[in-house]
Each structure stands twice: as C-alpha cells, then as structure tokens.
Length: 100
Length: 271
Image (cartoon, rainbow over all chains, first blue to last red):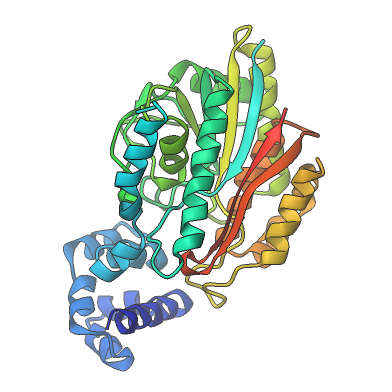
C-alpha cells in the first residue's frame, strides 16, 4: 500500500511540475477532476486541501515546493525524508567520541 | 591574517535507510568521519556553503548569494534534524559582506530572526559541531531562482572568501569551509530519480587531482543538463574549492543513493 501511495503522489508531483495543473484546477475549483483523473487517494486529496497547502499557494511558492512541503506531512513520505532512525545512534556515537 | 585550514565537500541529506541499509550506513559513517576530521583541524570558525530549500527564502525576495550575520541560529528541523541552537558569528559575516562590497561583490545578509537554517546547513553542522559551540557562518547560494547562479561567479565568491580570511581576519584564526550538497540528482522533473554516476566520479577525480577549479568552466546550463536540477548544488562545492586553489582532495565516500534520488559524497581538500 505504501508503495502504491508513493507512486500516486509521485504521479501527481510529476504532473504538477510539468503543467502546474493543480494550481489552475484548484483556483478554478476543479481539483476533484484532477484527483479523479490520476486516481489520487482520498487521504492525499485531503492533504492537498490543508491550510498549509493553501497558505503556500497564497505565498506564491512554485508547485514543486508546495507539494514537497505537503507530502512531507504524509506519513509514508515523511518517514522516508527523515533521519530519525539514525538519531539515537548519533547521540550514542557522539557521546562515545566525547563530543556530546 | 587568518587561514583556511581545511575544506570539505559533502552531502547534506540523511534519510530513512529502508531498502538501502548498507549504503545509508556508509553515508552516516562518512558524515561522522567528516565531522571528526573537521574537529581534528581545531577550527575557530566554520563556513558552510549550501542552499535553502525555500523554507526561508521563498520567491518573494530572491537573492543569489547571502551570508548569515547572526550570533546564533536555530535549525528549521526539517528531515528531523535536532532543533538545537548553534553558534554563529555576526562579526565575520558582516565583515565578509563589507569586504565583498569593497571588492564589487554584493552579498545579502541573513538575520537569525528571519533565517532558520534547513537541512542544507544544519546536517553538516550537526556532524561537525554536535554541541553547537563552534561558530558557523552560513553562506546561501540560491539554486531555486532563475537565472541560476553561474559557476564562474561561485568560484569568484570562493576567491573572495579566501581573500577575506587572509586579509581581514585576526592573525591565527583557523577557518574550515564546507560546500554541502549534491552531487548529481534530478528531482520532480522528467528525469526524476536519475543519478549521473559518471559525472559524480569525474567531479571526485578532478578534485583528487587538484583540478577542481575546472568545474567552474561549465556554464550553469551545462551543469543543469549534466548533473540535474538538484545537481546544481555542485555550485556549493565549486565555491568551496575556490577557497583552497590547487589543493588535492581525498574522497571519503561516494554512494549513488537511488532510494534518496541523489549521488552523495564527501571529500577533504588537504591544505
């Protein structure tokens, strides 16, 4: 399931970058058509409707960065873009080297 | 006069290891090795050349080159970098901007109240100065704008930094410079996920041969086509290399990290 969601998000992102489609569609209230067209799952749709996304859109950030920001909040993606698995080891290693 | 006593090129991401555990481990250990080597040089100050990923510097105000001029920074915390404050050095940053103006190189200033370093700066700082007590001066090169910064101009910025350290800084001040980013990667564009291993190894070979300055002969368009939109981060390395002209590099590690969508490496320039 995780891979499927990633692939769908990837599809959305690639499309956004090529055409900046979502910006146009959202501003014209047709985003559901885009979601349907690409089979974007409901939870991702909800994410793209979050205030954070709207705020970024309002601030004029290019779609690539708005989407990166939003998908980073999506658990499967956020987990991938995280160094969390290394943090406990980092603390231990730095303590062992006497620098923490 | 001060001196650039060490220079390093390194990546600035550390993501989840799943699916590439052994390679991710080599990256982590490589970053640790860079940190140890930097601390062994006993620097008084660390200059980190990298880029903001539009967390701070959006599209409203775009400056190609900017210098941190704060006494302390708080990481943004993206990619789960620990949000621990680390020291800056206003005097160094302000002096570099002033020296640049005198040398016909205009640099913008970044104040801490509006600039919280993202992973581009804070990952290398985390490994080099885990306690946050080594003063850091961030230099931001903006690869999120058009026109893209020019490699020659980045080389000139590195030359400027070297001259500033040697001509304006206190006698005996020891400065280490890090260029933190890349190498090749394509993100969210048609070649998304590609890595140009040939380019990456060519960069490292040039640096090992003491010929890293040749990278500045590329145009921004060449670099974009060869290394990808993310590979424009090679500009951070080009800037760093110009602070230690002719120095030979030692490759600490190289990993084509396809699961992270980037070629990633570290090198030390022996001064």
